[in-house]
Amino acid sequence: MPTAWPFIKWEGSRGDPCTRIYNLKIIARALMALIVQKYGGTSVGNAGRIKNVARRVARAHDEGNGVVVVLSAMAGETDRLINLVHEVSDFPSAREHDVVVSTGEQVTIGLLSIALEDMGYRAKSFLGHQLPIVTDSRFSCARIERIETEKIKEELGKGNIVVAAGFQGVDSGGNITTLGRGGSDTTAVALAAALKADLCEIYTDVEGVYTTDPGVCADARKLKKISYDEMLEMASLGAKVLQTRSVEFAKKYRVPVMVKSSFTEAEGTLVCEEDTDMERVMVSGITFNKNEAKISVVRVPDRPGIAAKLFRPLTEAGINVDMIVQNISHDAHTDLTFTVAKADYKRALGHVKKVAGEIEARDVIGDTNIAKVSIVGAGMRSHAGAASTMFETFAKEGINIQMISTSEIKISCVVDVKYTELAVRVLHEAFGLGKEDVAEER
Ligand code: ADP
Ligand code: ASP
Ligand code: MG
Image (cartoon, rainbow, N blue to C red):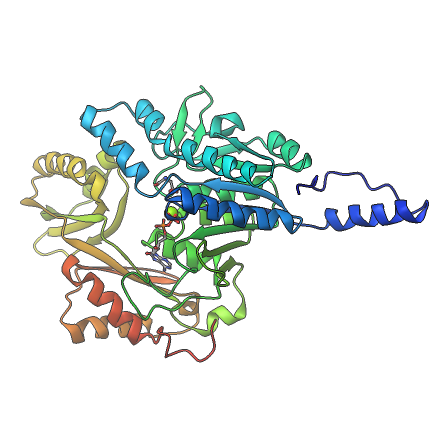
Protein backbone atom coordinates (compact mmCIF):
# COMPACT_ATOMS: atom_id res chain seq x y z
CA MET A 1 0.00 0.00 0.00
CA PRO A 2 1.11 3.59 -0.47
CA THR A 3 3.71 4.97 1.87
CA ALA A 4 4.79 8.56 2.42
CA TRP A 5 7.97 9.27 0.47
CA PRO A 6 11.08 10.71 1.89
CA PHE A 7 10.13 14.12 3.21
CA ILE A 8 10.30 12.79 6.75
CA LYS A 9 12.58 14.29 9.36
CA TRP A 10 15.39 12.16 10.76
CA GLU A 11 14.71 11.72 14.50
CA GLY A 12 18.08 10.34 15.61
CA SER A 13 19.02 6.80 16.61
CA ARG A 14 18.42 6.95 20.36
CA GLY A 15 15.37 5.66 22.22
CA ASP A 16 13.77 2.25 22.67
CA PRO A 17 14.26 -0.60 20.14
CA CYS A 18 10.89 0.05 18.50
CA THR A 19 11.79 3.68 17.86
CA ARG A 20 15.18 2.59 16.52
CA ILE A 21 13.57 0.16 14.08
CA TYR A 22 11.13 2.87 13.05
CA ASN A 23 14.01 5.28 12.49
CA LEU A 24 15.89 2.70 10.41
CA LYS A 25 12.80 2.31 8.25
CA ILE A 26 12.75 6.06 7.77
CA ILE A 27 16.40 6.02 6.68
CA ALA A 28 15.74 3.13 4.28
CA ARG A 29 12.82 5.03 2.82
CA ALA A 30 14.86 8.22 2.55
CA LEU A 31 17.39 6.26 0.50
CA MET A 32 14.77 5.21 -2.06
CA ALA A 33 14.84 6.89 -5.40
CA LEU A 34 12.66 9.45 -7.08
CA ILE A 35 11.82 8.21 -10.56
CA VAL A 36 10.10 9.98 -13.45
CA GLN A 37 8.49 7.48 -15.84
CA LYS A 38 7.18 8.58 -19.24
CA TYR A 39 4.90 6.38 -21.33
CA GLY A 40 4.41 7.15 -25.04
CA GLY A 41 1.31 6.93 -27.22
CA THR A 42 1.50 3.23 -28.09
CA SER A 43 2.05 2.33 -24.43
CA VAL A 44 -1.24 4.05 -23.46
CA GLY A 45 -3.02 3.22 -26.75
CA ASN A 46 -6.12 1.62 -25.19
CA ALA A 47 -7.72 0.80 -21.83
CA GLY A 48 -5.87 -2.51 -21.51
CA ARG A 49 -2.52 -0.86 -22.11
CA ILE A 50 -3.30 1.86 -19.58
CA LYS A 51 -3.96 -0.88 -17.01
CA ASN A 52 -0.62 -2.45 -17.97
CA VAL A 53 1.08 0.91 -17.36
CA ALA A 54 -0.72 1.18 -14.00
CA ARG A 55 0.77 -2.16 -12.94
CA ARG A 56 4.29 -0.99 -13.87
CA VAL A 57 3.86 2.30 -12.03
CA ALA A 58 2.45 0.48 -8.98
CA ARG A 59 5.46 -1.85 -8.96
CA ALA A 60 7.92 1.07 -8.92
CA HIS A 61 5.91 2.61 -6.08
CA ASP A 62 5.80 -0.69 -4.14
CA GLU A 63 9.57 -0.88 -4.39
CA GLY A 64 9.58 2.26 -2.26
CA ASN A 65 10.28 4.85 -4.94
CA GLY A 66 8.63 8.21 -5.33
CA VAL A 67 7.00 8.02 -8.75
CA VAL A 68 6.06 10.84 -11.10
CA VAL A 69 4.45 9.63 -14.33
CA VAL A 70 4.31 11.66 -17.56
CA LEU A 71 1.93 10.51 -20.29
CA SER A 72 1.39 11.12 -24.00
CA ALA A 73 -2.00 11.01 -25.68
CA MET A 74 -3.18 7.63 -27.04
CA ALA A 75 -1.39 6.69 -30.29
CA GLY A 76 -2.95 8.53 -33.24
CA GLU A 77 -4.96 10.90 -31.04
CA THR A 78 -2.77 14.00 -31.53
CA ASP A 79 -2.87 13.44 -35.33
CA ARG A 80 -6.66 13.14 -35.13
CA LEU A 81 -6.93 16.40 -33.19
CA ILE A 82 -4.64 18.26 -35.61
CA ASN A 83 -6.73 17.00 -38.55
CA LEU A 84 -9.93 18.13 -36.83
CA VAL A 85 -8.50 21.62 -36.43
CA HIS A 86 -7.68 21.74 -40.15
CA GLU A 87 -11.11 20.40 -41.10
CA VAL A 88 -12.64 23.39 -39.35
CA SER A 89 -10.25 26.03 -40.70
CA ASP A 90 -7.40 26.49 -43.17
CA PHE A 91 -5.98 29.22 -40.96
CA PRO A 92 -6.57 28.27 -37.32
CA SER A 93 -5.13 30.64 -34.75
CA ALA A 94 -2.05 29.23 -33.08
CA ARG A 95 -3.55 29.73 -29.62
CA GLU A 96 -6.75 27.76 -30.29
CA HIS A 97 -4.80 25.09 -32.20
CA ASP A 98 -2.91 24.32 -28.98
CA VAL A 99 -6.11 24.40 -26.90
CA VAL A 100 -7.45 21.54 -29.03
CA VAL A 101 -4.27 19.57 -29.69
CA SER A 102 -3.26 19.42 -26.00
CA THR A 103 -6.46 17.60 -24.96
CA GLY A 104 -5.33 14.05 -25.79
CA GLU A 105 -3.09 13.99 -22.73
CA GLN A 106 -5.93 14.99 -20.39
CA VAL A 107 -7.73 11.75 -21.22
CA THR A 108 -4.77 9.46 -20.58
CA ILE A 109 -3.66 11.04 -17.27
CA GLY A 110 -7.21 10.80 -15.92
CA LEU A 111 -7.58 7.19 -17.04
CA LEU A 112 -4.24 6.12 -15.54
CA SER A 113 -5.07 7.79 -12.23
CA ILE A 114 -8.43 5.97 -12.19
CA ALA A 115 -6.70 2.66 -12.96
CA LEU A 116 -4.23 3.22 -10.10
CA GLU A 117 -7.04 4.17 -7.69
CA ASP A 118 -8.86 0.99 -8.69
CA MET A 119 -5.79 -0.96 -7.64
CA GLY A 120 -5.82 0.71 -4.21
CA TYR A 121 -3.19 3.40 -4.83
CA ARG A 122 -3.53 7.12 -4.33
CA ALA A 123 -2.83 8.94 -7.60
CA LYS A 124 -3.45 12.49 -8.71
CA SER A 125 -3.35 13.84 -12.26
CA PHE A 126 -2.17 17.33 -13.24
CA LEU A 127 -2.38 19.29 -16.49
CA GLY A 128 0.52 21.55 -17.45
CA HIS A 129 -1.18 24.71 -16.20
CA GLN A 130 -2.12 23.15 -12.87
CA LEU A 131 1.50 22.60 -11.77
CA PRO A 132 2.38 24.89 -13.63
CA ILE A 133 4.90 24.09 -16.37
CA VAL A 134 5.62 27.60 -17.63
CA THR A 135 6.69 28.03 -21.27
CA ASP A 136 7.26 30.86 -23.71
CA SER A 137 4.38 31.79 -26.03
CA ARG A 138 5.50 30.02 -29.21
CA PHE A 139 2.38 27.94 -29.74
CA SER A 140 3.03 24.45 -31.23
CA CYS A 141 6.75 24.63 -30.41
CA ALA A 142 6.90 26.28 -26.99
CA ARG A 143 10.00 25.98 -24.83
CA ILE A 144 9.84 25.23 -21.11
CA GLU A 145 11.07 28.16 -19.03
CA ARG A 146 10.24 27.08 -15.48
CA ILE A 147 8.52 24.26 -13.59
CA GLU A 148 6.92 24.77 -10.17
CA THR A 149 7.57 21.60 -8.17
CA GLU A 150 5.78 22.43 -4.88
CA LYS A 151 2.53 20.61 -5.70
CA ILE A 152 4.37 17.51 -6.89
CA LYS A 153 6.54 17.40 -3.78
CA GLU A 154 3.50 17.85 -1.58
CA GLU A 155 1.70 14.92 -3.25
CA LEU A 156 4.78 12.70 -3.11
CA GLY A 157 5.20 13.59 0.56
CA LYS A 158 1.69 12.23 1.17
CA GLY A 159 2.66 8.99 -0.54
CA ASN A 160 0.68 9.77 -3.69
CA ILE A 161 1.63 8.95 -7.26
CA VAL A 162 1.75 12.05 -9.46
CA VAL A 163 0.52 11.73 -13.06
CA ALA A 164 1.41 14.73 -15.25
CA ALA A 165 0.27 15.53 -18.77
CA GLY A 166 3.14 15.55 -21.25
CA PHE A 167 3.49 17.86 -24.26
CA GLN A 168 1.75 20.89 -22.71
CA GLY A 169 2.44 23.99 -20.67
CA VAL A 170 1.11 27.44 -19.99
CA ASP A 171 2.64 30.79 -20.92
CA SER A 172 2.93 33.81 -18.62
CA GLY A 173 -0.39 35.10 -19.98
CA GLY A 174 -2.20 31.91 -18.91
CA ASN A 175 -2.52 30.53 -22.47
CA ILE A 176 -2.17 26.79 -23.07
CA THR A 177 0.88 25.89 -25.16
CA THR A 178 2.27 22.68 -26.67
CA LEU A 179 5.93 21.67 -26.99
CA GLY A 180 6.12 20.25 -30.53
CA ARG A 181 5.57 16.66 -31.70
CA GLY A 182 7.06 14.12 -29.35
CA GLY A 183 7.13 16.79 -26.64
CA SER A 184 6.17 14.47 -23.77
CA ASP A 185 9.78 13.26 -23.70
CA THR A 186 10.80 16.83 -22.96
CA THR A 187 8.17 17.22 -20.23
CA ALA A 188 9.52 14.08 -18.56
CA VAL A 189 13.20 15.02 -18.66
CA ALA A 190 12.49 18.63 -17.65
CA LEU A 191 10.43 17.40 -14.68
CA ALA A 192 13.20 14.98 -13.73
CA ALA A 193 15.70 17.87 -13.85
CA ALA A 194 13.47 20.22 -11.84
CA LEU A 195 12.80 17.55 -9.19
CA LYS A 196 16.44 16.39 -9.20
CA ALA A 197 15.10 12.88 -9.80
CA ASP A 198 17.48 9.95 -9.68
CA LEU A 199 16.35 8.58 -13.04
CA CYS A 200 14.08 9.39 -15.96
CA GLU A 201 12.65 6.29 -17.65
CA ILE A 202 11.21 6.69 -21.16
CA TYR A 203 8.89 3.76 -21.92
CA THR A 204 8.12 3.22 -25.59
CA ASP A 205 7.31 0.55 -28.20
CA VAL A 206 10.92 -0.57 -28.79
CA GLU A 207 13.40 -1.91 -26.22
CA GLY A 208 15.80 1.03 -26.29
CA VAL A 209 17.92 3.11 -28.64
CA TYR A 210 19.10 1.01 -31.58
CA THR A 211 21.95 1.40 -34.05
CA THR A 212 19.24 2.51 -36.49
CA ASP A 213 15.44 2.53 -36.64
CA PRO A 214 14.49 -1.14 -36.00
CA GLY A 215 11.43 -0.54 -38.16
CA VAL A 216 13.69 -0.04 -41.19
CA CYS A 217 16.60 -2.41 -40.55
CA ALA A 218 15.85 -5.83 -39.09
CA ASP A 219 19.51 -6.18 -38.15
CA ALA A 220 19.46 -3.06 -35.93
CA ARG A 221 21.07 -3.73 -32.56
CA LYS A 222 20.06 -2.26 -29.21
CA LEU A 223 22.75 -0.14 -27.56
CA LYS A 224 23.46 -0.63 -23.84
CA LYS A 225 24.37 3.03 -23.48
CA ILE A 226 24.80 6.10 -25.62
CA SER A 227 26.33 9.50 -24.80
CA TYR A 228 24.23 12.65 -24.55
CA ASP A 229 26.09 14.13 -27.54
CA GLU A 230 25.52 11.11 -29.78
CA MET A 231 21.86 10.92 -28.76
CA LEU A 232 21.49 14.63 -29.45
CA GLU A 233 22.80 14.14 -32.99
CA MET A 234 20.72 10.99 -33.54
CA ALA A 235 17.54 12.72 -32.34
CA SER A 236 18.08 15.90 -34.32
CA LEU A 237 18.95 13.87 -37.44
CA GLY A 238 15.71 11.92 -37.35
CA ALA A 239 15.72 9.14 -34.69
CA LYS A 240 12.34 10.01 -33.21
CA VAL A 241 12.73 7.71 -30.20
CA LEU A 242 13.56 10.86 -28.14
CA GLN A 243 12.60 14.45 -28.88
CA THR A 244 15.79 16.48 -29.44
CA ARG A 245 14.89 19.04 -26.80
CA SER A 246 14.56 16.32 -24.16
CA VAL A 247 18.16 15.26 -24.81
CA GLU A 248 19.30 18.88 -24.52
CA PHE A 249 17.67 19.03 -21.07
CA ALA A 250 19.17 15.69 -20.07
CA LYS A 251 22.66 16.81 -21.11
CA LYS A 252 22.40 20.24 -19.50
CA TYR A 253 21.10 18.98 -16.14
CA ARG A 254 22.94 15.62 -16.25
CA VAL A 255 19.72 13.60 -15.98
CA PRO A 256 20.34 9.87 -16.56
CA VAL A 257 17.71 8.72 -19.08
CA MET A 258 16.80 5.06 -19.55
CA VAL A 259 14.88 4.23 -22.76
CA LYS A 260 13.00 0.93 -22.52
CA SER A 261 9.92 -0.97 -23.58
CA SER A 262 6.60 -0.81 -21.73
CA PHE A 263 5.75 -4.26 -23.14
CA THR A 264 8.77 -6.32 -22.03
CA GLU A 265 11.20 -6.54 -19.11
CA ALA A 266 14.29 -6.03 -21.33
CA GLU A 267 17.02 -3.82 -19.95
CA GLY A 268 16.90 -0.75 -22.21
CA THR A 269 19.49 1.88 -23.21
CA LEU A 270 21.05 4.36 -20.80
CA VAL A 271 21.66 7.86 -22.19
CA CYS A 272 24.50 9.23 -20.11
CA GLU A 273 27.91 10.96 -20.06
CA GLU A 274 30.43 9.81 -22.66
CA ASP A 275 32.98 7.23 -21.50
CA THR A 276 36.04 5.69 -23.11
CA ASP A 277 34.08 2.60 -24.28
CA MET A 278 32.03 4.83 -26.51
CA GLU A 279 35.04 6.07 -28.45
CA ARG A 280 36.12 2.55 -29.36
CA VAL A 281 33.59 2.34 -32.15
CA MET A 282 33.75 4.85 -34.98
CA VAL A 283 30.04 4.92 -35.80
CA SER A 284 27.29 4.21 -33.25
CA GLY A 285 24.19 4.82 -35.31
CA ILE A 286 22.58 5.60 -38.67
CA THR A 287 19.64 7.98 -38.96
CA PHE A 288 17.44 9.33 -41.71
CA ASN A 289 15.06 12.23 -42.14
CA LYS A 290 12.48 12.48 -44.91
CA ASN A 291 11.00 15.71 -43.59
CA GLU A 292 13.26 18.14 -45.41
CA ALA A 293 13.08 19.75 -48.85
CA LYS A 294 15.81 21.25 -51.03
CA ILE A 295 15.84 24.65 -52.73
CA SER A 296 18.46 25.59 -55.36
CA VAL A 297 19.03 29.13 -56.59
CA VAL A 298 20.68 28.85 -60.01
CA ARG A 299 23.26 31.27 -61.44
CA VAL A 300 23.39 33.74 -58.60
CA PRO A 301 25.74 36.72 -59.17
CA ASP A 302 28.80 35.92 -57.02
CA ARG A 303 29.34 39.09 -54.98
CA PRO A 304 29.37 40.04 -51.28
CA GLY A 305 25.98 40.39 -49.60
CA ILE A 306 24.01 38.03 -51.86
CA ALA A 307 23.74 35.18 -49.33
CA ALA A 308 22.70 37.65 -46.65
CA LYS A 309 19.99 38.99 -48.95
CA LEU A 310 18.69 35.48 -49.65
CA PHE A 311 18.63 34.20 -46.09
CA ARG A 312 17.51 37.34 -44.21
CA PRO A 313 13.81 37.01 -45.20
CA LEU A 314 13.85 33.33 -44.18
CA THR A 315 15.20 34.20 -40.73
CA GLU A 316 12.60 36.94 -40.37
CA ALA A 317 9.87 34.43 -41.28
CA GLY A 318 11.14 32.04 -38.57
CA ILE A 319 12.25 29.46 -41.17
CA ASN A 320 15.28 27.39 -40.13
CA VAL A 321 17.77 26.57 -42.86
CA ASP A 322 19.65 23.32 -42.35
CA MET A 323 22.34 22.36 -44.89
CA ILE A 324 23.81 24.96 -47.27
CA VAL A 325 26.08 24.29 -50.26
CA GLN A 326 27.52 26.96 -52.55
CA ASN A 327 29.26 25.84 -55.74
CA ILE A 328 32.57 27.22 -56.98
CA SER A 329 32.04 30.38 -58.98
CA HIS A 330 32.16 30.37 -62.83
CA ASP A 331 32.20 33.67 -64.75
CA ALA A 332 31.15 35.54 -61.60
CA HIS A 333 28.08 33.34 -61.04
CA THR A 334 27.43 30.48 -58.62
CA ASP A 335 24.64 28.07 -57.55
CA LEU A 336 23.36 28.04 -53.96
CA THR A 337 21.45 25.08 -52.54
CA PHE A 338 19.96 24.64 -49.07
CA THR A 339 17.41 22.56 -47.16
CA VAL A 340 14.46 23.53 -44.97
CA ALA A 341 11.79 21.53 -43.12
CA LYS A 342 9.09 20.28 -45.52
CA ALA A 343 6.53 22.14 -43.39
CA ASP A 344 8.29 25.43 -44.27
CA TYR A 345 8.99 24.56 -47.91
CA LYS A 346 6.20 26.51 -49.64
CA ARG A 347 6.77 29.64 -47.56
CA ALA A 348 10.55 29.41 -48.08
CA LEU A 349 10.12 29.01 -51.85
CA GLY A 350 7.93 32.12 -51.97
CA HIS A 351 10.51 34.24 -50.15
CA VAL A 352 13.42 32.93 -52.22
CA LYS A 353 11.66 33.46 -55.55
CA LYS A 354 11.04 37.08 -54.58
CA VAL A 355 14.70 37.74 -53.70
CA ALA A 356 15.93 35.75 -56.72
CA GLY A 357 14.09 38.19 -58.98
CA GLU A 358 15.70 41.15 -57.22
CA ILE A 359 19.27 39.76 -57.42
CA GLU A 360 18.78 38.52 -61.00
CA ALA A 361 19.39 34.83 -60.35
CA ARG A 362 18.48 32.66 -63.35
CA ASP A 363 16.13 30.20 -61.66
CA VAL A 364 14.84 28.71 -58.40
CA ILE A 365 14.34 24.93 -58.29
CA GLY A 366 12.60 23.11 -55.46
CA ASP A 367 12.75 19.39 -54.66
CA THR A 368 10.74 17.63 -51.96
CA ASN A 369 11.87 14.11 -52.94
CA ILE A 370 14.97 14.06 -50.80
CA ALA A 371 16.15 12.38 -47.61
CA LYS A 372 19.02 13.15 -45.30
CA VAL A 373 20.93 10.03 -44.25
CA SER A 374 23.51 10.42 -41.48
CA ILE A 375 26.13 8.46 -39.57
CA VAL A 376 26.75 9.41 -35.92
CA GLY A 377 29.55 8.40 -33.57
CA ALA A 378 31.72 9.91 -30.82
CA GLY A 379 34.52 7.69 -32.18
CA MET A 380 34.71 9.82 -35.34
CA ARG A 381 36.70 12.35 -33.29
CA SER A 382 39.56 9.89 -32.96
CA HIS A 383 39.13 7.58 -36.01
CA ALA A 384 39.69 8.66 -39.61
CA GLY A 385 37.93 7.17 -42.62
CA ALA A 386 34.25 7.38 -41.79
CA ALA A 387 33.53 9.78 -44.67
CA SER A 388 35.32 7.69 -47.30
CA THR A 389 33.57 4.49 -46.13
CA MET A 390 30.22 6.28 -46.36
CA PHE A 391 30.87 7.69 -49.84
CA GLU A 392 32.28 4.40 -51.19
CA THR A 393 29.29 2.50 -49.84
CA PHE A 394 26.91 4.86 -51.65
CA ALA A 395 29.00 4.67 -54.83
CA LYS A 396 28.84 0.85 -54.83
CA GLU A 397 25.03 1.01 -54.72
CA GLY A 398 24.79 3.77 -57.33
CA ILE A 399 23.35 6.22 -54.79
CA ASN A 400 24.12 9.76 -55.87
CA ILE A 401 25.05 12.21 -53.09
CA GLN A 402 23.42 15.61 -53.61
CA MET A 403 24.72 17.45 -50.53
CA ILE A 404 27.14 16.73 -47.67
CA SER A 405 27.53 18.28 -44.23
CA THR A 406 29.71 17.27 -41.30
CA SER A 407 30.27 18.01 -37.63
CA GLU A 408 32.75 16.51 -35.15
CA ILE A 409 30.63 13.42 -34.59
CA LYS A 410 28.35 13.14 -37.65
CA ILE A 411 28.31 13.11 -41.45
CA SER A 412 25.06 13.75 -43.32
CA CYS A 413 24.31 13.22 -47.03
CA VAL A 414 21.23 14.29 -48.95
CA VAL A 415 20.10 11.60 -51.40
CA ASP A 416 17.01 10.87 -53.49
CA VAL A 417 14.23 9.79 -51.11
CA LYS A 418 13.75 6.50 -52.99
CA TYR A 419 17.17 5.34 -51.74
CA THR A 420 16.53 6.06 -48.03
CA GLU A 421 15.97 2.53 -46.71
CA LEU A 422 18.65 1.04 -48.97
CA ALA A 423 21.15 3.72 -47.87
CA VAL A 424 20.44 3.03 -44.19
CA ARG A 425 20.83 -0.72 -44.57
CA VAL A 426 24.06 -0.65 -46.60
CA LEU A 427 25.66 1.86 -44.22
CA HIS A 428 24.57 -0.24 -41.24
CA GLU A 429 26.37 -3.19 -42.78
CA ALA A 430 29.41 -1.22 -43.96
CA PHE A 431 30.07 0.07 -40.43
CA GLY A 432 29.58 -3.37 -38.89
CA LEU A 433 26.67 -2.36 -36.68
CA GLY A 434 24.56 -5.52 -37.02
CA LYS A 435 23.76 -8.13 -34.38
CA GLU A 436 26.23 -10.61 -35.86
CA ASP A 437 29.02 -8.07 -36.25
CA VAL A 438 29.55 -7.14 -32.62
CA ALA A 439 30.82 -9.72 -30.15
CA GLU A 440 30.48 -7.57 -27.07
CA GLU A 441 27.45 -5.36 -26.65
CA ARG A 442 28.29 -1.75 -26.03
P1 ADP B 1 6.43 7.04 -28.28
O1 ADP B 1 5.05 7.13 -28.80
O2 ADP B 1 6.61 5.99 -27.23
O3 ADP B 1 6.99 8.36 -27.88
P2 ADP B 1 7.86 7.19 -30.81
O4 ADP B 1 7.10 6.65 -31.95
O5 ADP B 1 7.90 8.66 -30.64
O6 ADP B 1 7.33 6.48 -29.48
O7 ADP B 1 9.38 6.67 -30.84
C1 ADP B 1 9.64 5.28 -30.92
C2 ADP B 1 9.95 4.91 -32.37
O8 ADP B 1 11.17 5.54 -32.76
C3 ADP B 1 10.22 3.45 -32.59
O9 ADP B 1 9.03 2.72 -32.82
C4 ADP B 1 11.16 3.43 -33.79
O10 ADP B 1 10.50 3.07 -34.98
C5 ADP B 1 11.62 4.87 -33.92
N1 ADP B 1 13.09 4.98 -34.00
C6 ADP B 1 13.75 5.69 -34.95
N2 ADP B 1 15.06 5.56 -34.80
C7 ADP B 1 15.27 4.76 -33.72
C8 ADP B 1 16.43 4.26 -33.05
N3 ADP B 1 17.67 4.56 -33.47
N4 ADP B 1 16.26 3.47 -31.97
C9 ADP B 1 15.02 3.16 -31.53
N5 ADP B 1 13.88 3.59 -32.13
C10 ADP B 1 13.99 4.38 -33.20
N1 ASP C 1 1.00 13.47 -28.09
C1 ASP C 1 2.07 14.29 -28.58
C2 ASP C 1 2.46 13.86 -29.99
O1 ASP C 1 1.87 12.96 -30.56
C3 ASP C 1 3.26 14.31 -27.66
C4 ASP C 1 4.01 13.01 -27.54
O2 ASP C 1 3.50 11.94 -27.91
O3 ASP C 1 5.13 13.03 -27.01
O4 ASP C 1 3.34 14.46 -30.56
MG1 MG D 1 7.75 9.98 -29.02
